[in-house]
Length: 369
Image (cartoon, rainbow, N blue to C red; front, side, top):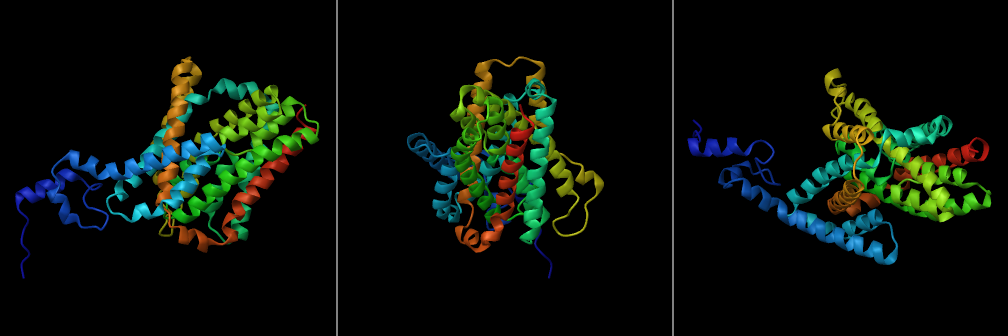
């Protein structure tokens, strides 16, 4: 039996849509021919984008009124609203927010870092900070091995702990992909990192006081061992203004390492095809464009003075975009799958968190003057 050849109008409509928008969530590609024009694409995104914005705004309100970390609130409310993702009208919008807002949020972080800040840290503290970061990643890889998890989960947990918490986790997940780390595992990693960071902001400054650390030592511990940027700097200022200034330099130096770490992770992960085997060297060496853009902004910010107004607004936009990405990711995660993962799934993050604190505390006690 001969198949009926599609008419020219249907063929042109399918070609104009392109592969990304060729079908809906259920794979019914024949519906694409009936989509009128680019305006329909945005209509498909609006429900998911709108619900992400509403839940993110609620997370910001709770954070402002109750003092909870805003990323943690976004995760909690997003998980509570998980049922929204079962509606086919919200799927594409949630995916768009989780992907595009993440990338632009990471790019805008480049306005917060300069090469001069890294130089101001000094050679000795910079070397100590690198040791802390390498130790965190190494312990996460070891924890993943003990938990019988794959290499990608260890890289995700270690890199997020070593750099800047949820922001680094989002950037790393962008190159790792859900083929290697499930969305439930990724969301659980974000939750544990956010909780650990919030607890560290409360505990580490008190431990620095008990150890009679000076401002530089306290700033190094809080800047090198607390995950998220806001909690890390806030922990330093909880000791003193001088410690807060020192923690800011240390933490921004860690943020500057985001680009190189994600690039290395892309190379390491890119060599492993998710279906098994090894990919071609050219694919393995490919660095995500949003990381190149982040590095470009760091270089631009280092060479040219960026007005404080632009840098401040870029920081606010980056925080907002990353909050949207976290909230959308949480809403797309099945909570029943998180509960099935078990305690061993958090072992890499816990191992990296404990190691980064112990190594940073040791350097502050015996090396940092």
